[in-house]
Length: 297
Ligand code: SF4
Image (cartoon, rainbow, N blue to C red; front, side):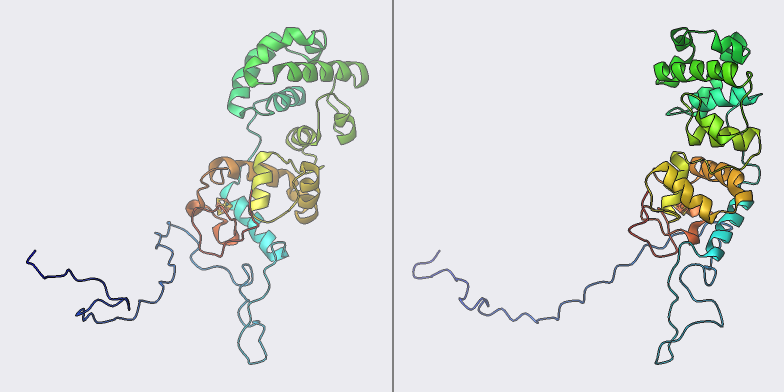
């Protein structure tokens, strides 16, 4: 550096001497825009009026100034529930229990074994099991430990062995070896709670006594805002209040199928879902309607 030259210092005012920058107004904050998503084929493109908090045509309530006011969203509105049931019917017309069985007893055993286990696994275990022990009397004659190796792969096999053998013994001693078509009697059997009883009563006896509440029904009922309850029995009570009795059996199977095929716990396939524009779940993967933070599984 030549002698006598002093390097330029930044001005104390914060402006660099000689810097003639044109000051541009800062850009306004960009509005958040959801990236456009391809519309799936056959997707209902327009929400149906009146179902999603949008006022029905010709009946829009007005504000004082005359502007239309959106009606309050009601997740339990009868027309919304009717639409959910209709679309489930259309998508899953033949939904039924996935557990293989040839009798009420086989279905009861399969349902007990299906706790915390997949139906596929249970369907692998039960054919061998029922070949080895063909009747309820065969099971009643066992000690629980003797059954354990045959059902080990379904998990929780010690408790399940006690339940199956205990239920078999009680059926033989109190019910003439027959599975009763009665909720209270079924609930008196060891290891049988309302979910198992509802599966047997609905699927085998076609007796709508309640709604099956398993992990799928719990998750989807929360996502669809059909209940806020966490306890299975309370969820069932809520569903029994809003779903017509004649639909309880089909509704249970359809929701379970929906949970397996589209509305999985992780990454539900919302873009393919027939309920998409009726669903405001917080964890949707694709949405045409507003999201409700409280609608969580
Ligand atoms: S839109 Fe998504 S979250 Fe809602 S019911 Fe369908 S799959 Fe489940």
